[in-house]
Amino acid sequence: MGEFELIERYFKRPARQAALGVGDDCALLQATPGTQLAISSDMLVEGRHFLSTVDPFKLGHKALAVNLSDLAACGARPLAFTLALALPRADDAWAAPFAKGLFALADAHGCELIGGDTTQGPLNICITVFGEVPVLNGRSQALLRSGAQAGDDIYLSGTVGDARMALEVFRGTLALPASAFEAARSRMEQPTPRVALGIALRGIASAAIDISDGLLGDLGHILKQSGVGATVEADSAASRVAARAHCSDIAPAQWRDWALAGGDDYELLFCAPVSQREAVTAAAQASQTVVTRIGRIETARGLRLIDASGQLLPNTYGSFDHFA
Ligand code: ADP
Ligand code: MG
Image (tube, rainbow, N blue to C red; front, side, top):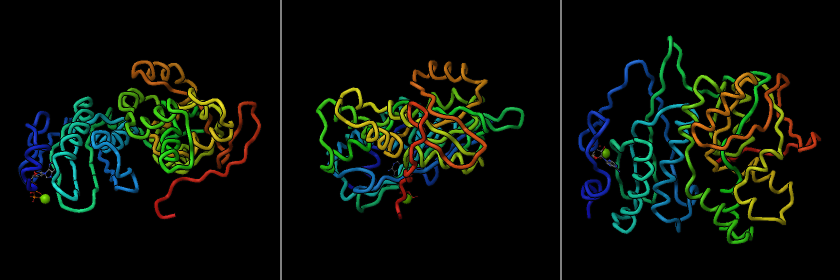
């Protein structure tokens, strides 16, 4: 199978929303009047972002999920994506399940593959997603990192820390009961992009980010870009680890470490004024997403951590950095 046969067989489908899809030099997208385009790219490199043994179906899901998560964090509705793929060889056994996992998630979000590039090389997957956000009375409805205000609540969607736990099991540095490992592993391999929640939070959240490098590290981006500080209740966050329901003998401090600095979570971390608490609850219900209040934005710069009893905890957490 050659390059063009591979594209034809697995990645070319008739265009639906797009004015022109795969097959020409450019794809064409018709922008909806009164909206802005939201665009984001994420690359997945073998050995760095995924293990070489991962099921290609799950990899197809994850490659798009991490990109949709960025649209979610902006409150954007997904429209389309491109796929730049480097593959060691044109291989049906890999491409068929990869495309299946990719399109299952794409179809669930009405997000269509409109183009890309295919080359021979070490396995590397780069997706660019395109979404749209409305502009109302000249104001973009996009959720940004820069809008948090002192007094705002800080919220977390879903569960965090599991991807890190699963990675440690794969590396041999952690042993878990089978049920806990399954819970953690599915969060690592098949994260759920919180697209419906992000859209529901337009006009409610003051700031948002998706958690890829660790909860506190990513919160740090909101704090920096908003010029504020925060106090986070470490144990509220640590209570939201999916595997926790399956483990009994792990110390509270260990759960905090995984929840606060684990990374690879693809949950939304967002802020909203106290006056919006009911609206946040309604957005969580409408999008069928668990949302947990984990802290408060403050004028005093810096990040303070407290435990369930309000005692200050040392904050020694850093954010993941590829070059650190
Ligand atoms: P060009 O050489 O003009 O860049 P290509 O020969 O690389 O075009 O690609 C042919 C068509 O196939 C283009 O429409 C391109 O967007 C699409 N394409 C290439 N690789 C992929 C892929 N992995 N997934 C989806 N579309 C792809
Ligand atoms: Mg090309």
